[in-house]
Length: 508
Image 1 (cartoon, rainbow, N blue to C red):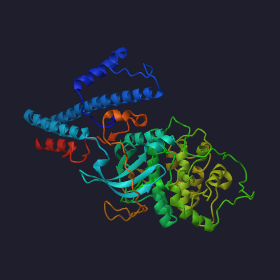
Image 2 (tube, helix red, strand yellow):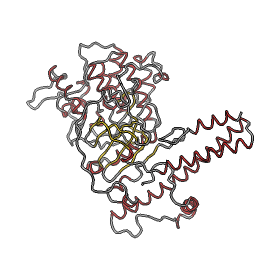
Image 3 (tube, rainbow, N blue to C red):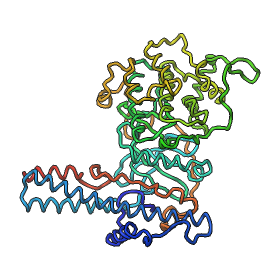
Image 4 (tube, one colour):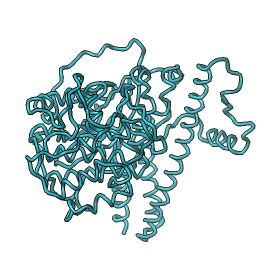
């Protein structure tokens, strides 16, 4: 529909190349001259023209990229055939077989993925802007997690750029430390992300169950979190929402980072996170509404109430602010260092049992974070090692002295991580193994009541021009389909890599 994913086999390939050539060699006579300044009458018309231009550019860009990829795969097979010293007849047979696979693959890529391709199953997450539920692909039977976001909410709350950043990050970053994206698409009312399902639950669930973690278990998950956060920093993204809810465990207990709805490219240093316009920069003692100085630690009964409300806070519009860095709350410029502050707050909660600045009033939480110099304290119980305390203090501090500001190796080199085999973390047995009884098991996630979703009166599938309504033009380029030839999707048959290897072996 919007040309955002895979090779779209529409139109004459030769014509496509002529169009591309015309646009490059004769910019003054480009085939698609949709300059927004030419003969337009309104902002809506300009928006539609820009959307159409992007749609067409995406289509031919993807076509030419697919053509290049196919040529490279053919050359790779020819190189392997030469290395295996196969005969000319055998090499020709291998190339014919490859062409058949390519044809089948292109046919699959032309199929437009939509909501009707999936069977909707259990609801496993709910937020201010949408929901996450288990789903199953009707053709292959594969199980995924489907994130569904309401377009009107994204537009009214100014979250369009965040949605784009989330989709782009998931497409760009190929790391075993973050949740994998397989498809993204949209209909008239919703945006959809189809991701891998991780049945182990999240770190928040683990903390609610265990209360505190041993330093060995905390060290393991802190280390995997560091690798996950660093993997997106390497691609110049800031997560900005690092919290236990977004650290998900797979069936073996290994951690992956998820929920990139607040992520931003590194060059965009100013926040548009949903916060009330309130001055949090109060310095000195923190007083309540009666003028009494607020103790740094909530009473035990209030802490218990905070823990009971912990899950509900995660699904509110504002969410929990307990892990947000002071520079973010102050709406100043900030960089990747804000994610390391968040990780320090999570480490504190893992070892102490609650976040360092928690309060039953979000405004008080913000003030405590801003005044971290006087509010960051450690209780007598439970006791933690001096190395653990030192690491927390070097994460929950000014940006200038915060570990990670000079690179991730600063954190890895801290004495608390002594003995950690960073390159082997995902190969070794995890510190905790969740109970998972099957591919559809959701016992490690909270149960949600099912609410009937009103059906949209607008058809979900229609002409491409429906993409150019004023609402949908904000989401041009959102569609994505994982197009790695070395990973079979659906019923695509033998993997290309297996075919190349087996063919080479057969003819040696």
